[in-house]
Image 1 (tube, rainbow, N blue to C red):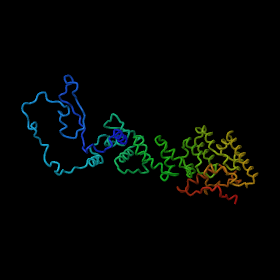
Image 2 (tube, rainbow, N blue to C red):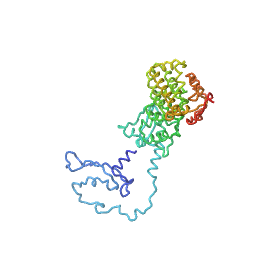
Image 3 (tube, rainbow, N blue to C red):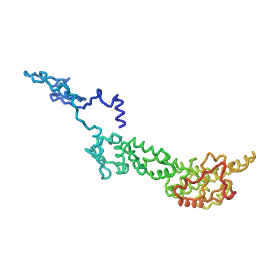
Image 4 (tube, helix red, strand yellow):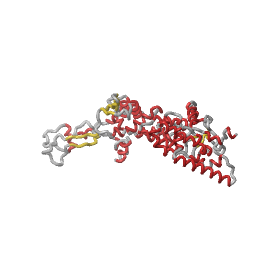
Length: 431
C-alpha cells in the first residue's frame, strides 16, 4: 500500500477526489466500425478514457465519426427535444446510499466474494487479494497470480498466516508475546513492512525483552535465519542473568561466535574473572572433539590479569579437572598466566613504592573498566580478591554453584548485589 500511495504522489495525484468532486469510471472503448484494412490511419480502433457523464459513453462522441449518410427524416432528439433539461431535477431529495468504504469493509471482514486461496499444508484460507497486496510486497509482486497460492509452512505457519491476515484487517492490531516469533518470521517472508516495524517496537523495548526475557527470546529463536538480527540484539541484553543461563542445558548449544561475544563483553556480570575461564571449559567439554579447534579464540576472551594473584600462582598445581588442566598446560595459556602474574606484582610494587596501601583499590584500579562484578551469597567460592583462599577455587566448586542456581527461584538473579568496587564486601576469611 505504501508503494501505491508513493506512486500516487509522484504522479501529482495528491487529492483524494477527482477535480470538481466528480467520480469517474475507467472505460475501454472499442470502435465497431474500425477495420484494420480499410479504415483511415487517423481513425482509432480502441481507446481508454475516464468518463463521468452518461452521454460520454456514446461511441460517436468518443471516436468523432459521423455516419456516412444522413437520414432524410429526423428524430425528436435531432429536433432538439430531450429529457435532460428538467426543472428542479437536482432539488429532488436523493435516496440514501451505503458508503462504499462501509460496503467494502463488510465484504472483506465477512470474507464475501474472496478472490484468492492461500494454501498452507493442505489448509486453505479464503482471502481478498487486494488486502494482501495492500500490505505484503510478496503478493504485490506476485505475477502471474494463481487462484491458489501455496506458502511454505516452515516460513509461514497456518497460525501465523491467520494472525498476519487478521492484523491486515484490523485498524488497531495487537500482537501477543506468545505469537511474536512466528508472526515475525511470516512477516519477513511475506515482506509486510509495517508488521515488521510493529514487531521491532517490542524487540527494541528493554522493558519487554531484557535479561531473562531476552535470553528466553534468544533460545526460542535459534535455528531460524530470519531471526538472526533479533537473536544478536537479545544477546546484548544478557548481563546479570549470564550465570543462570550458563547453568542451563540451552547454554551448551550456544554457537561459538555468540559465546565469544558474551565472554568478550564488558557488560556481563560475574563474581570473578575465574568464572569466565570456567564457562569456556564447560562449553568446550560438552563436545570437546568438535570444539577444541575454538580453544584459542575463547582463551583470547579471558582477562587473566583480572584474576586474583593467589589463584594465578596456584591454579596450575591445584586444579584437578582434566580438561581444565589440559588447557592450563597449553603454551599460550601458560604464557598468559605468567605475564599476568608479572603485571600484577609489578603494579603492586609500584603502588607500594609510592606509599599506597596494598588493598583492593590497588589491585583493581584497572578492573573498573572491565567486567561488571557481582556478589552472590549462593556462590561457595566468593572471596575478596586479596584473600589467599582464592587459590583454592576449583572447577568442581563452579559446577556445584551452577547446580545451586538451578534450584533458585526464577527471579533470584534480580536479587544478586552488584559489587561496590570502592567499598568491596570482605569475605569471611578477612573479617
